[in-house]
Amino acid sequence: MLARRSYTIPLPSGASLALGERCLVMGVLNVTPDSFSDTSPTDAARAIDAALAMEAAGADLIDIGGESTRPGADAVPAPEESARILPVIAGLAGTLRIPMSVDTYKAGVARAAIGQIPLGERSLAATERMLAILRAAGLPDQVVAYAADLIPLYVCAVAFEEAVQGASNWSPADIEHFVSELRGWFGALPADRFPHIVALAGPLTTGAGDDRFEFGVQVIVAGLASFLP
Image 1 (cartoon, rainbow, N blue to C red):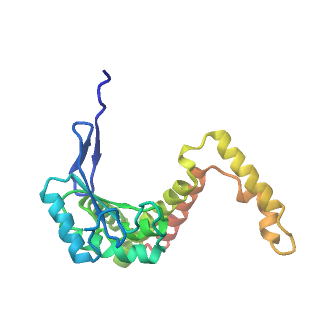
Image 2 (image 1 turned 180 degrees about the vertical axis):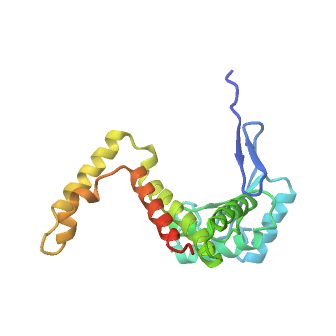
Image 3 (image 1 turned 90 degrees about the vertical axis):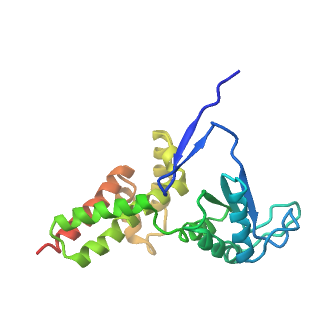
């Protein structure tokens, strides 16, 4: 008999979720009028109470869904799905002591859900260290504050782009194939409409992802340096 592997997932609160030690119980919270369950709450207040009740009953995590996946269920537009689940997430943030997840296949709904969660302790600690470094450089306080927003946004944007493309799992051959196709597509565009893209097809598709990321960091650092007294 194979031994079960164990994994520990650190959580933003500083706690951790242990996988493999025992079977974990997920409380499923369907905020839909057409769920498998006839008792699914359709308003935020009832849904929040239901989630807290499942936590009290011993659930290890809560999964929130705003679109039914039962056979024959109608698809729900992203704005409607968001309207169903976002008030629930906001109401549980800071109150629910166990992790919660969102059951969705829509990127916009997922991003909106993440935006409902306030900064955790680890994020605040990282922000504190970043502010300390920027202030130690002698930058004006307002520039420090703006930079503390800009730098994480840049890093997250690069990570998001790679995640969307699945680039983190690409082999060198995959990368070369993608770049070659992109370069050919740029070069084949109508030169009368896109003269600069056609002319720069080579440079636009030259350089590894790390090189481009480091260039962005250099631009940010150079820009911040211009604010030094």
